[in-house]
Length: 217
Length: 217
DNA sequence: GTCTATAAAGGGATAGAC
DNA sequence: GTCTATCCCTTTATAGAC
Image 1 (cartoon, rainbow over the protein chains, first blue to last red):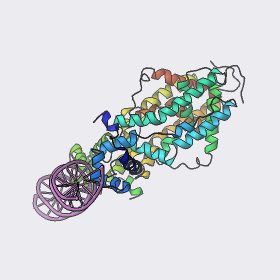
Image 2: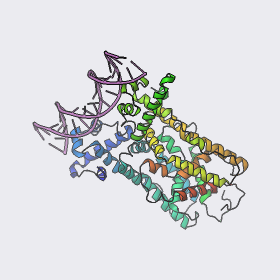
Image 3: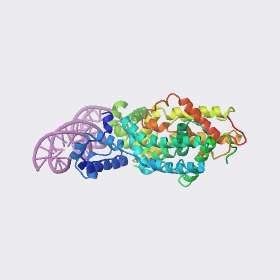
Image 4: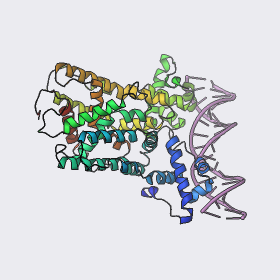
């Protein structure tokens, strides 16, 4: 009941497809309706199997939840932050990262997934931790690598790159993700999302630009 | 079923105490166990009344949830950010705000409340929005007022104070709150929380210090 | 308003046939 | 492995007495 929640059942190659159908259906419903509101019958119907088949793969609803979230591999982050080592204006790169990251973080699917996983975090801490490690943590690591390289070349001043990565995410995100999680309709903030991002990047660069330069703007 | 979810039932002054008992019991259980896992029987027992009495006050569990969250008044923020207009080193003040804010945001009760409200945000957007407005929004407003004053006196460079407030929260918070919501045990980050805060304040001040000053450090 | 007792419905999990 | 049918428990909500 601890780590085993994250394990996928061993299956024959033949039934691999059906397993994928189940996992995908489970994710869709869990993230759309939440864990509590998602019945095994609904998952079975969505996946095109019977309830009994579901229980043949997963001993309980909790195990299914753990497998669906634990096997979630975010390839999103892989495509982000590419071309980090190529030369070019550092602020241009920061701006692109900021836009990509924010679009990912505020994507309806991302928000829905976070809502569900956060809500069950107290009961299933291993599951939510795996969710963080496979998603946000991975993104932070990539960003950290980029900052380390930028600091090495003098494009940014030297500082702990892991901290810089978190601060970059934080200053860009502001309260936007929290508001999205809480379904808060912002009055005008959708219109000038670009201005918010640009301002965040500006703040970050002011704080991390090389020391010897005067007023960078 | 829309806005009325947030309304409190009209009661005689005599039964006001019992209503408070119910609301407090409901909050405690909703925030500890989540909405779905909290039964009316448990709330009744915790409040020391019977289920039927509960239904006399609230027509449904949803209505009880809306009232419990909607009537939640965070006096926390009131005490924060006081003495903003008194003179003193701006960075000292920022550091104190940052510590207070982070302590509030990462408090187990805060995290538990956010988990519950976020998880039901899709079903009850009015409730979660009220939660945000009464809590985080109010904190942001106070911070904005402080920044506006600091900018007026020249302690900080001129900029949109609302944006600065969100960026301040964001850079201080980093991923700390998200990790708390997801029960992610950080390896060493508990030890040097002060260092993280100091670094965040430093980043913010580098970005918002008055323009004519050279290297503030 | 407050209680006890109960109706009514839903859904997690399993038995047993194929 | 997969299905149909069912057990059984939990929980919401109410009826009716005081």
